[in-house]
Length: 411
Image (cartoon, rainbow, N blue to C red; front, side, top):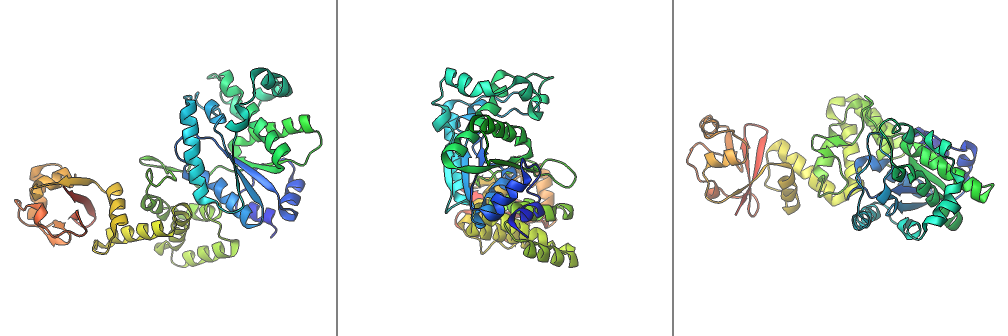
């Protein structure tokens, strides 16, 4: 398959402004393309990985990614379907922009450009904005954009209404000054992408700029991706640990796995086909899910973080915590209920660690032989916890039953 066909196979193509030109640019030339990220938060989520993986995949095939961080557009906010965004301060927008740029730089290296639209949008005065750019945008045209249509009943401010103009200026700027031929984005950005193409046409005239969108990352049941019980799955390891990321994908449904392998890894078709075939032979082993989880964690956090996630997974499955290192215990602090202990007895510790709801229940668990610390069964209700040999430095693992764990940290 040629590169464009490979993108279609992976489900990375939804809308295309000029299909034949897009095929020519991607298959026969080495071009610059850009993807934009607004710093509305301190971290990107797993939902953003589709565009990051596409950048990596195109870079792998010789094209040059241009990563645009929206330090300026983040101050305005792309219209949401439901309600107005809470405006960021300039300081917060630029702070988030720096964090997101740092995050993406860890994922994409080599021949790549990083730009921040605050560098040019902040220099445009009001009259220049209205005369040189605003005059090219017909209000009727803007109102009929999908994102605006969805907000007309509930109301949309001029601030958010003008967002597409600012993003269009970005597209024009990069096309004219950096020879960026293609803009990629999620399907929810299609209105902004085509507005940029329209601005380029009116300012430049005949051109070879192309816009492409990809479907949003959804599960097979049509629900939005990237949510867990505690909220979004973040790419920042301090917000979502590599272990939690690994577990999320390890528990992917069979109906989602092929789509996730195509959109969230840069594995080629032949290897994806082999993974799916192997998994189909013994689906209970969850081979495809394991490979997906490994590829995503390794991509986002690196090989060492993957090794830690695997060791923690194995320890929680087997109950053997003896070989874990400091990184593994720091991961356990994030994923298990963690209790600081001094001279508490086992009953108090079970309640503090949420393995028992009351002292009475804690005593029952102990007397029934259901409680152990670092593999040592505890049968005395007045047992002092800090007399148990520790697994690693100031850490110990308390277990209730077969699969209920908590982490003890000795003060």
